[in-house]
Amino acid sequence: MAKPIVLNIDYDYDFMLFAITAHEADYKFCQKLNKQLFLNLEREEALELKNKNQTDNLLFSFYAYVTEEEQIEYNLLGNKSFNQVLSNKAVTSNQGDLFGGDEPEISGQKGYLIPELSSYDYLMIVRVPYDPQEAYAIENQLKEIDSVLKVQFVEVADLASKNNLIF
Image 1 (cartoon, helix red, strand yellow):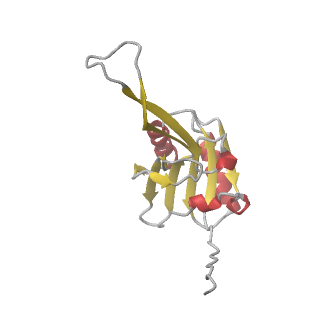
Image 2 (image 1 turned 60 degrees about the vertical axis):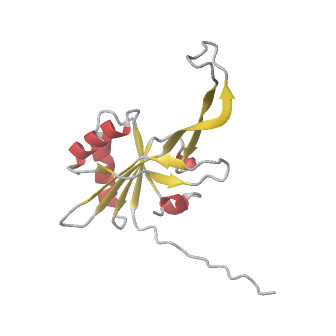
């Protein structure tokens, strides 16, 4: 019997990561972020993550922008996912519907892109090598947004679920 070959890959996490708490809808927060940092983040297809504890994939909001001159990529991701999925279980309504049938149950699945940062609403990735002065400047600009409650620069190497940031 042939011995299986295991491929171990060490990814290069060559970007800065900021965790942000802002209790505001993603599109509204994105508008404020665009204005504050002079960006043009646009909504992309949702980032999909398979969670081994749940049956359906988790979806996370995803915004992206690349500067023309410096070719710096900015990503804003929702850290919290909430997918409403129709269950196969039928629920009988107390009000009785027009056709007298049962309605499928709507159940929710919650998950986090980075579970260690579950108290944060958004993750902002700036794809440039780490520069302490640049990180400090971006963090201060984020703190100036009126809906931002908390901002933290995060060392990606210290995260257990850092592989979720590879896309």
